[in-house]
Picture 1 (cartoon, rainbow, N blue to C red):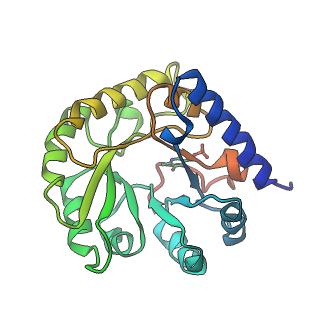
Picture 2: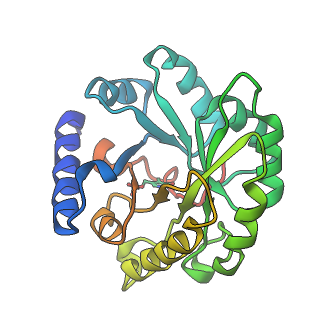
Length: 238
Ligand SMILES: *Cc1c(COP(=O)(O)O)cnc(C)c1O
């Protein structure tokens, strides 16, 4: 099957524009992160040639050769998978953002391992807003305490919150999960400098996410087509 990436981008762009319009939000208040896990270097380069700058990867081993192959394009790389201790050095050295920070120990390692010549690593705290459905993410009641510890880490810049609720197809009301994250985000805003990123929404639910205030949607299949089966589960660790 031939996948028309430029056409898919136009379709996603029009969905974002319609959702922003419905929510009375300016288009520039929502950033598009292209999730390129399992996609080829060529596919990323093609989307980059359409003007896309920010890309997300879930698996460190898969990502590093891709980042190296595309290094001359000046792309912005986000690590969006679950973060294991033995992967923090590579993430700190090669990525601009990490969205899956859910405990202090991981944050401390990322901070200590961030190379001195690079700016601070931008991070989002991942929150488990759908209870037992998800294995990753800190509990909503722990967000405030965790954030207050992360603010002081010199190698990191805490930017906001991220959630990965069960997809709309498996959950009656995905918007309720987004709403919980939004409330946590607003509660934290007064006490956290540089607090500007609400990372939520994927291909199937970007409209609900934008309606609930998402500032960064993470879109894979709507841009690149369906991923190869067996290598697509967002919860799969690298
Ligand atoms: C794969 C993935 C996405 C993109 O999912 P699509 O449904 O393909 O848009 C977004 N966020 C995370 C954390 C993912 O792992």
